[in-house]
Image 1 (cartoon, rainbow, N blue to C red):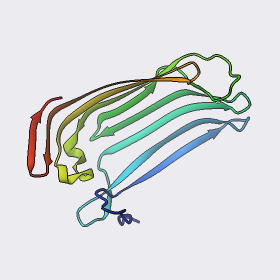
Image 2 (image 1 turned 90 degrees about the vertical axis):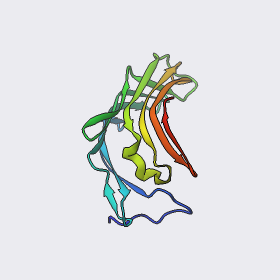
Image 3 (image 1 turned 45 degrees about the vertical axis):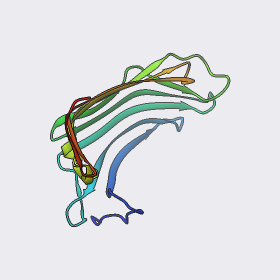
Length: 178
């Protein structure tokens, strides 16, 4: 069905995500890995949904969980996105991500997830907010650190907009670098 979904009140964006994932289950019935991809369909002229051309998003991960110990370990995680065969998004786990939700959990090491957004051309995404007619390039990094078995989570973010332009009401912003 390629017809647009029924919009909510004052919806400015209509889109549909389609995905396919493979899930691995270990002998102990705990999840062992997930691999998959996502396809994004966005509204085009006339309201019909069509795939966002030349885009890809893939994920590969390995996870273990121990319900008796009330803990889980995300051993590996990679998320990669591209548009027009140019890398756009990359997320990597630098070391296993440990999470404990019980009171009597064993000590585990720290871990960090790094996410990088590279050369996001805002003009490629105009269909999400056409009233802004945005342009320019965005780059960003996000680092998430887990300490003390996930009881302390830290965030570090940096972002940059180059040659940003947008329409706001009757005004036009152009050539802004932040």
